[in-house]
Image (cartoon, rainbow, N blue to C red; front, top):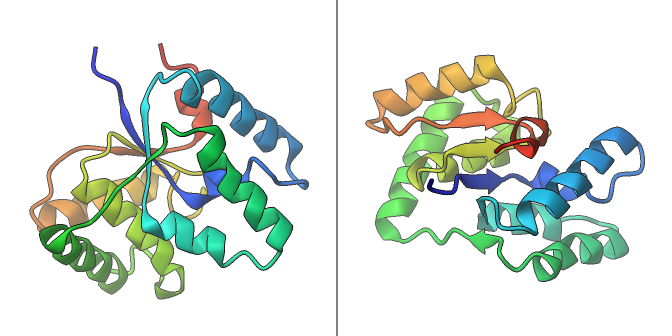
Amino acid sequence: MKKLKVYLDTSIINFLTVEDSPDYRRDTELFFETIIATNKLDPYVSRIVFEEINNTENIEKRTKLLETFTKYPNIKTLIAEDSNVEDIELLVKSYLDSKVIPRKNIADAFHIAYSTVFQMDILLSWNFKHLANINKEQKIIIVNKQNGFNYPFRMTNPLEVLYHE
């Protein structure tokens, strides 16, 4: 059976360090130890994840977040080339213009566009408002199809992947 290709948005990395949500932090740590560390799926991020982490004002927290990629070297970074960049920008514009994603959450639009263009099976997020949300997922699928992207993917949280067999 082929491994799932899973895009990790920034919230997944952030929840390894949160103090105010111990249950989600514990679930995220469990996800990384039992799924990521054991290569049960193919995890990916994009430059957007690194940009968001590098914008973290607290230097100690930023360093700890970046250490995730040393601790889990199997997390690959998607590299957009010329044709990919055009497709990603087209999709981001479409998500924003259709108001599926608010303009102030442009990073979320980029996470979705990378997941779409690189044909991820799952976009994983703790962001229930804009990403790990079945209603948003359906709207995104419609926008994707309108733009010629028909590869099906899910937008969900680590709990739904944690017990993947």
